[in-house]
Amino acid sequence: MSISTLVSIKGAPASSRPRRGAPDHEPAGSRRSHARIRSHALRAMPVWLRHALFIAALTGVWELAAGQGLLDPAFFGRPSGIAAYLWKGFVTDGALWRELGYTLAGAVIAFVGGSVCAVATGLLFMVFPGFHRASEPYLTLLNAMPRIALAPLFLLWFGLGLGSKVAVGFSLTFFIVLSATVAGIRSVNSDHLVLSKALGATPRQVFTKVTLPSAVPVIFSGFRLGLIFALLGVVGAELIAAEHGLGQTLAYLQSTFSMDGVMGLLFLLAFLGLGVTSLMNRLERALLDWQ
Image (cartoon, rainbow, N blue to C red; front, side):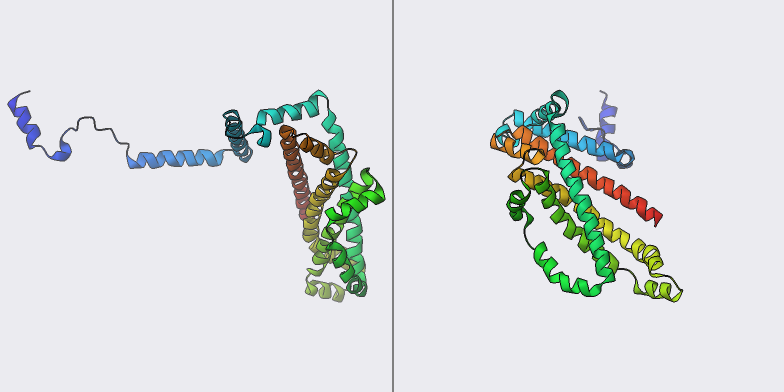
């Protein structure tokens, strides 16, 4: 290197001198642009795909932890064992279809029966307010009783079959839907009722055109909760004593320490509850569009 070159480098400002091994830094604007692109790509991803990626990542971490001994499969199970159990129960021998059918049949019967009786009772309270005031303390007393504690009594009355499971689910659904029905009817704007009567509307028209459309959102909130609690009541009664059903199968698997089967049925019940809730939400939106 010549003397003139050394002098020029020595006299150059420190910021302009070449630094040995210095990395090429990316401009801040470029980094922000890349971050915005990643953010837009994440927002453009469908919601179901994001949920699927999250579940896949969680399942992978669970399987890896169980394989490395960080989680004991005897207490927590492992995703591969859960998938194998569900595959065998639904595809290979199909035994879970029968148990699922018993549980769903009990839940549907309990929900429909409890909802119909609750709505009819709520309408009766609207027509006869004095009857409502007289029966309210007794209904509160009955509702305060823990239904799971009453399950052995229902088993004694109705046996190990479907009747005792329906009775537990019915008792849960009835009071939930009844409370929602009464609250929905009470939430109707009194000015609308007075105006309707002043315009000459008949009691039937007031009920179908004013009271019922205004009470539908609150009543459907009760339906949504009632359906979930009907399923919980049926499964809870099956856990105590039953001939068939997912609860009876779950109790058997717990007694044999089959954690893969226990976790598989718990996930099945969770997704079943999610499915019925989504169904009720769709039905509620359809009725609100009609409203």
